[in-house]
Length: 350
Image 1: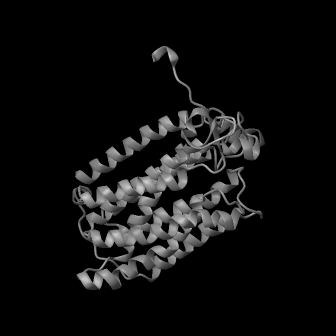
Image 2: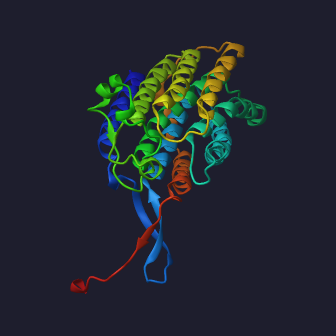
Image 3: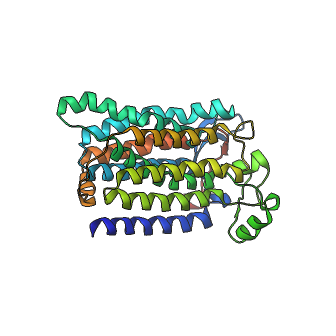
């Protein structure tokens, strides 16, 4: 009962958020959260740094994915020390990788790539679990099972991507092809459900000049598909079908990551098949190999309330607050847009 109720409430919350986001975030007023004055110019105005909704949504995506991960791992009795060790190991590598992989693939210094960072996370996750087992696990006498833990990571990643795509909508990146250049069937399907981005500072405008143009809502499609995948994977996980939850979630998310680039218009590197598509295909093969060669796992009853209760812990709450601010400052400080600010006094109020 508790498991089903938890999934239902989570689904409703995400659906309401997505409905609002798809209607609102392509607008011009939903890119910059605030502009902070940094230096005074000769003219007397101030040059500022823009803080973006991209950073706000990305920080929220990390925290929501992390919270779901803690809940799922808590249901299979993974100790908090083990969860923290694995999560911190992956974060310390994947967060810098989001910018490094963008430099490597797209040859751009001032951008991020979630696709590249997620690929790195997928590759190192089994090693992070193994390292935790042979260090803290041996010292504190516990062993973290590989496939159930990877299933939890895959499901939380899927939910994190749902929010991550909203970040892309707000900034106007990872955008779809114009409907005018798409197949007639796609034009008929998406004519009423397309995105039209507004604002000259959105990436779709300064990179491709497609502001005000109807484009395929590829970010919305990804969010919806990943939400459904995450929900199904979570139901399977809570019924102790760990291998099925792991493989289903990984295959669907990575197959779509590769396929979806056929409908995107943003620059993804040179060549007909992008490096990101190759990474996604490798991720599927890698996951299937881990599943095939891993020993069978024991089936234990799960109760989501155990995982939820584990979240009510000062150390976890502080960790997520710190994580949110760190990610927001890392991804939310825009390096491709700037601002000029002036200040004045309302004389009639003095």
